[in-house]
Each structure stands twice: as C-alpha cells, then as structure tokens.
Image 1 (cartoon, rainbow, N blue to C red):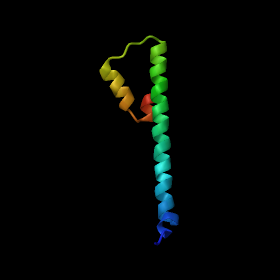
Image 2 (image 1 turned 90 degrees about the vertical axis):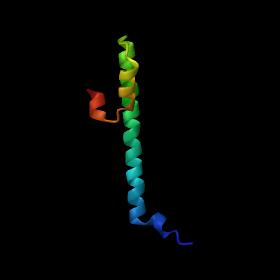
Image 3 (image 1 turned 120 degrees about the vertical axis):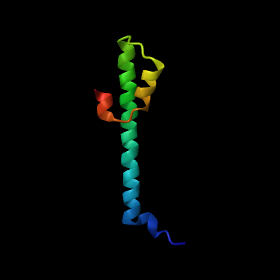
Image 4 (image 1 turned 45 degrees about the vertical axis):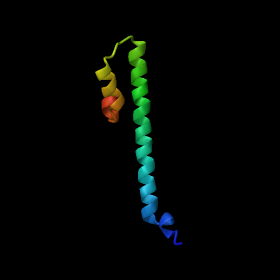
Length: 65
C-alpha cells in the first residue's frame, strides 16, 4: 500500500490548514466565553436571541468589540 500521500507537501498543507482553522475556532470560543463572563459579572441580562448571536459568532474582531 502506497502511503506517500501522507508525507507529501500537499498532505502537510492540508494538515496545517486544519490546525490553523482549529486554533481560530478555539480562540473564538475562548473570546465568546470571556465576553459572556464579563456581561454576567456586570449583571447584564441577555435575551436568548442575543446569547445565541454571541455564541454562534466566529468573528474575533466582532467579539472583541
């Protein structure tokens, strides 16, 4: 069985893209949780719709603002 694909430059590129995507998703999840903690600490009540908007957002800049 030829396993050369798994060590090819294309395979490495695909894995690198997957790792970068995973890190970005992790950062968004962390930022989302931090934002929710800040809002909770400030006793800001969120509607279900607003909470859903925050938790489904993956734009790091938008979450930062």
